[in-house]
Length: 524
Image 1 (cartoon, rainbow, N blue to C red):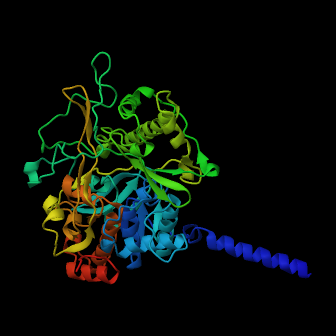
Image 2 (cartoon, rainbow, N blue to C red; image 1 turned 90 degrees about the vertical axis):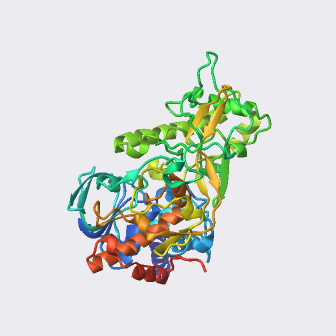
């Protein structure tokens, strides 16, 4: 009898431990209403922040994600978070990093983490706040009347009504469907008087420091290099900075998946890479890829050098593409990146030392398990940007850094990745578009989230905000998206309670609540 009781007690303890370790999002089922106080489109960190902030303020909230996961890039490999000046990170964003610390058993914020840790924390926060999440639900259509959005529908056929809407997507799809003014690409210098605007060649990061011939035997440009595109410095265009995947790789042999050949592999795509390697006899792997250490013998991989994981020139179509076309662009980026790693591992021209260095790594077996161990979210660094009554520009992030309607702060450098790869008059390759300029912490005004009243009175924009390409190149960081998301969520709650248009939210009251919830809107 005693043995039986011991076994039952042991079983009971095991069940309790299993329950405690289970993701909270799976233990707290949420109710689908189909009509909500707030509908947030975009499962990004900014979308999660907006949803949680509004739900905590008493609203019924739906978060609609085009992916199965929530957390956008932060759950998809961007584990080395672009925090900048930590003094500017408060409110929900700081809570997220604190919760990541708790995940690792630390009593402090953690800014480098595994993707699965980020996803777990986001899921817990949504579940605890009572947010209903629609997954795999890309936006299809919306209904509106007299400048107000009434409902949205997904490609899956779901119809979701709301009183207030927030577009927290990387692409600005809800904003565009609603007829809100927006722009794409790079303004010319003359538009806002920005020194860093338009066509740029001055920055020396990720460029060819030694000339690399970029034509074949017939004198034609090799793959990825174009004769077109040269312009005067400062000239504007509609071209988009390069996208890539932030890969999470493992050094643990028991947690690795090898770098295998993709189905569409073509070694000719990497001819420029091998020529770059050839003119740098002692080149190291760390000059081709950034390795950011993460817990669990893992790394966050990012673009480094002139030929790396950035798929330069292949992002231009993405912002305005259909969902089906975006999936094809996503696949092209995946094929390119997988092929890049496979080329380094297998091509006979690659030095043995590079192969040996890369052979220590593999794709993480325990990450992205629902998407074949590949990051589900492409790193959409920039897409559409709203054109509101106020546009944040270079001067706002470099000189005029104080704002009376501040709802958060940014501090990361102005950083635009390369836009195109061009053929010089000497038949060598040149990357164009990179800008990296440090800034001091600056305040972000509520105005950047407000569409023109005549276009939408119940819509807030928290990611594709009203900013020039130059200013957006600093603002576009995930912690800032969380900051703006929280601010949008609380503003939505105030609009619902007051029964006013989002343009008429009481800004001092909004700021007081934000400060009470830990948001940093000024630095003393």
